[in-house]
Length: 326
Image (cartoon, rainbow, N blue to C red; front, top):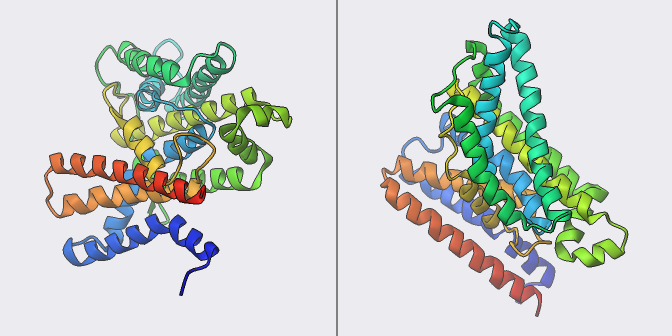
């Protein structure tokens, strides 16, 4: 019996989910302690900080752009939060920490959004490819983080600040709740709003989108600004987890984040992708890494496996796209 086109489409879209379920079943038998509530919550916590950025990166790539600066943006945001907190709570201003920290968080999120908007302006006004601008920002933000910390971790935070990145609410890690909230927000935004439809239209054919009345430049500025804002949020979460602003954190995150987005089915050509697919891609990578750790697989082999997964995911996407065009 030949499956209907609709059934074949559903199966092809759900192939990653099927592989994830099969892999979880395999690990439940072969990896001691994998299928426990504590370990699964630990996986969710571990993927949360990269995951919130991955959802924004999905929008960026769907729109036909890329952001290579998110790893450095995380480190910079954590250091900036610590620096502003230390400055406001110091002798000059003398603000109590419960006042200084919220101000520092709001300032860091604002700076993050404007950094992303700067990338969008360079892309839309001066036609500088986002690859080049964010490559420059990757180095610049890393240097800025070193400058404001003078190369040493800043530790101005009180113990209660750890709740944001290391606490629990209703038995669930708080970073995981932020991760799920960001997922739900962007899933709704991309699937049920005119802005989401505009992002797909811009990535699919920017000129056609422009002729249909979509403000292409505004869309690109917003998706890049939102992703940088989420990177700043992740940096705040990480500074809370490690209780310091440290310039050397989040090295190489941009590659892991882009990998999760690609594995989730988003096309680097733009116009195609799903927030839900990125959710599966993020969890899939987290489960793979967790499973290999529980199985005592060498860290070097873990990198090899991750690279192979990215290559296979890209090939599957290309094959799937080729079939859909026939």
